[in-house]
Image (cartoon, rainbow, N blue to C red; front, side, top):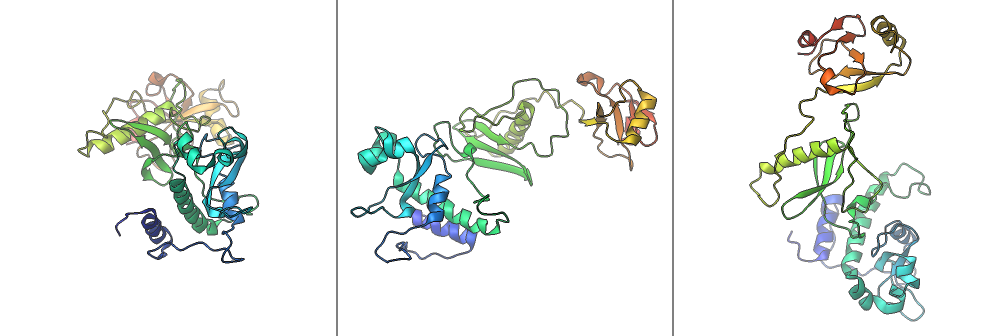
Length: 330
């Protein structure tokens, strides 16, 4: 299918996502009450109000602003609504209701028709997936939503890209002329790995979400994966220069708590002073270990000690040093 218009894009999305064939020409929306009345949808207006303002990006006090043609003392179709905060909708000096649609578009550089088309496509996808919603609709109205990371700092929605290596392990990024900006790096599955990184946590510069932050070493790891990925593609405009990661030489260890009686008993034979309930210990992640083999050692933030100190196997009490690690973790 060749995509030459917004309706062609809607037909393609409906076919790929919902498996539904739409007519070649867009149908006029009609009210279920009267064919001459503008279409009404309480659910669609409620969904519009859940989105950030199309001008300033705020999520507080957002209203469903009607933008389409209408008769005297009559609102336009609900499917012409866009999300606007109260000042940009009604009360501000440059409010839509005060200066009109054309002047409003020119004042804020918007294309309301394009916004409406995008919202209708998003609504169709959300409605399809929301059939799987197992929750009370009055509590969780939608299981799929557009997150704040999809918008830049000005509240304008932008194109994002993603790279995934498995389920829940992905990175969302924005592409620029000669670089990439990581917007949302997944930490799933990495929380067990302890890395002594005391640097300030990472926040994407050009992102509406200013509350969420990420460990900088995780961002650097995803940056390397993106770099390696794009280095295989002969595209100098989107390639990144691979850099050496400072934590590459660190052994993979977990910071765990002592919570079970058998571990406590074994640990007290080794170090009675630190063998207290809920104290931290280090446990190395072995590539291939013998069955039921778990090693622990006193917790240390100094990574240079991780390979030189002795570890204790919690089931047998055997003490293992760095020269014996190859026997238990090949």
